[in-house]
Length: 416
Ligand code: 5CA
Ligand code: ZN
Image (cartoon, rainbow, N blue to C red; front, side, top):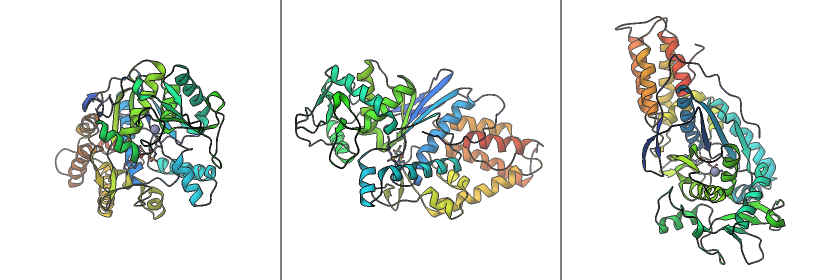
């Protein structure tokens, strides 16, 4: 699939520190240790509705990882999928009497525009589930051939992974069985389905149903792919095993990231799928998680349409830490707009407070588990010192800070 255009990324003097991030599997902040090219897979949207601020916050968190790695001297191979065939998409298309392909294409196009406006660095590989189907089919056949998957005995053609044969099952999320069963039922799984070997066995392939789109499948069974094998297959094909970061929102810890990892580890008989599993907390509105199914959404495109500066949206979302569940409020946006105006005034001065400590502070804060509130505080202090005119002032400082804020926080302030 077509990705979106890359924003300009200013080059900064020197290099930043190695990135530390929180790994869900180990339950602690760990140092990432990428090769020359860091490898990251982030779960993309299911395009049945527009990008809301929860999605945006999650992609911004991983955009910071991308930026910090690049600043530390790495190239970054970044991969993202689009779940352009799945139950929620078909249900929405049916509800609205629309062709599911048209719906998916429209919402994916809008997502690209929103990401471009927010200055999110684009993935090098942006891959739809539909285009990955031939590869997914091959992987499901492999699991069947090895006796690790089975076809349900009820004539539907549905295929499941036998989780009792997956030794590492549960290693990522580390939930107990009751918790797993609860989330599995809430998030697209079917723990009650009759005929499965274990309630927690996940679907790999769904046999064709009347009226549903289908493709040629494993052993000649038409149908469509399960959700978790989609991301396992795309990550394997683009990044291979042992990539540095698998990312998404915290609602993907279980079942999605657990099963993607278990599928890939079963397919390759190697570990690990990813070296770290990084999860962004949930953005809520009016006391509830922002979600398409609840309908309590604030869309990036709606705010843009009202004339809100995307850089203010970016700054508002980064003013909270990525691992803290938080609510969106109009006050948050107003505060970000004021901050943006102040920063813009400061970077367009002829001289400003010394820039070296700002660059150091930004690198240090972001390298430490993406402390964006701490990084913002560093720039706030510099802007205050610059606008007051008190203390030491340097001629090139505003330009340097402008570049550093752009490269590391992704906030474009002026034509520096
Ligand atoms: N297509 C799958 C992933 S393969 C999916 O979860 N799509 S999604 O459109 O539902 O979500 C896209 C991304 O946004 C996921 O990483 C999800 O965890 C994240 N997300 C969804 N809702 C929120 C929210 N309220 N706050 C923060 N992140 C969210
Ligand atoms: Zn995914």
